[in-house]
Length: 196
Image (cartoon, rainbow, N blue to C red; front, side):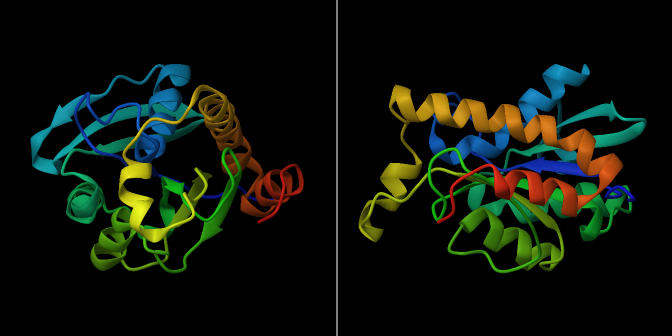
C-alpha cells in the first residue's frame, strides 16, 4: 500500500497569546506537536504571512505552516507558500477544529465543502477543495448564535484532556499516512471512535 505524497501540513488558527489555548486553534496545536516531536523550529516568514517549520518524517521532508493572517484569511497565506514551492493541493493536509464532531474525535477526509468553517472557506476560495483535511472535533454549543464565542474560548479541563489526546493521536497518524496511505489511517481513526 503506497503512502500519501504529502509535502505540506497546515494548522489553522489565530495568532496571538489571547487565542493560543482556544478551541479554534486546534489546528495550530497539531502542527506545534509535530514540530516538537520531529525537531522542527517555527520561524516567521512575512512573505508567506506565516510561521513555517521543516521536519522529516519516515524519510519524507514536510513543511509545517501556521498562517498568521487570522483564520478568516488563511487561504492567501497557504497559497503563497504552496505556489512558491509548487505544492499541489492534493499534497496538502489542513488540520482544523470541527464543530460537527464530538470533542476529541478525529476524522481524515479528502476534499469537500467548508461546513461553515471560515478558515476552510478561505482556503477553498484560494486553493480549490482537493486538499486533505484532518478534522479535530470540538463539538457544537447547540445554538448557531453561540458558535463564535464557543470556538474562541477555552475548553473546560475534561474536554481539553480529550483534545490533547486527539492531538497526540493526530500526530501519531502522520507516519502511517506517509507510509501506508490514507485508507488505512481512515480505517483506524474512524473505527476507534464514536460516530456522529
